[in-house]
Image (cartoon, rainbow, N blue to C red; front, side):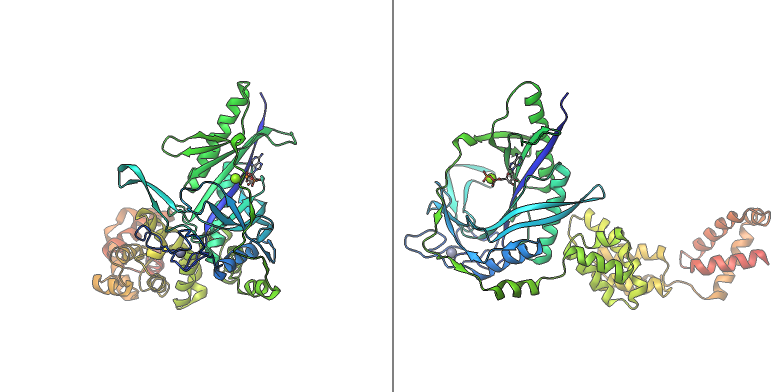
Length: 484
Ligand code: ADP
Ligand code: MG
Ligand code: ZN
């Protein structure tokens, strides 16, 4: 038996988050009426001249800077040609050499170990339009053309073949998406096609220097799909080699429904794009200040934010990682913290509420934290109410249920339902005395030295007070009464 290792390289297209397209002023809005967002440039009318969107250029450079790339100040564009039914001009404007960004890197965490993955390049490219073959579930006997997406700006990122498992590829994409959404240079939603990934996979026997024959897999439209497609493809390649067969360099399609890859075309018939310089966009040099200004504008990135959360809020590595795993969650947490009465006291409980109760609810309703019915302010209020002993942690959980259902303010819920905690000692003493009388067995056990027996009496006090007695006081008072 040969021992194989997996080699994976990724090509990721991310839609640049700009209001208008990259070579014209049309809107990039998702879901518009077919062909509503088009003009003479993006419909490829003869003689129409592309005009570069400066914001798109800035977005790519920011992304490059955040990933430790060298920025090439020389800006050149090329035509990549083939027959594109969805790009009437039959070429795509892209970059060949040099790309805007060369040699970057991204650190990922797999099984508790850090691995730095080298990224070859990021370059700018315009998107193609879309052919429509069905409307709803009705298959058409003809095809329709929607050019809304034509000329929307993309950044194409290509990694070195350095990933060595489906999990590493998954972590790479997750981390990339996290950084890019922090930068806001792309929304990276795979569901809306704003992040698309081609996966190159090969295997080789452990210790072998040369790469094995690679297969490119297209048409993967979810993060989990990336993992499944690589897992399937590695197994397929092993089986081909082990049965004495030979792998061919080819492009395969991921069929998510069936969970398999299917051959699409072999690389023998590989296209020669005949790149040549785009005559309508003359090369130019970016001034140094252009790049340096963008560097100065970079926001705090996930790694730095995590460090700061640990340092300033005394959060554990685990809590800080969870909270900074996406920008929306980090922002929500900090907003909550900033509106709380005592930041120092609230930091840890707020982290807990966000990562457990709230996240469980959001997952169950399949919404993200931006759509949370519980606002950051109200969550902070809830924690304040626990900290100042207005309600117990247990009651807080039922209050939270209402807050989530009705988007309500915790103070109102507590008042309406009469849930304010009883912290009046004389009242608690009264209930404790009743409970002691009603629990002769537990009391006898306690007096015989079984300290744990007090739990039953505490339970009864909580029951009698409908959960409202301050548990700390109940414990203290009961022990005093029993020991007296
Ligand atoms: P192409 O333009 O034909 O797709 P590239 O040189 O741009 O070719 O490479 C595309 C991707 O393939 C890169 O992400 C690279 O890391 C990856 N790659 C190259 N060789 C291998 C290999 N043997 N196994 C897996 N991935 C590979
Ligand atoms: Mg490729
Ligand atoms: Zn246009």
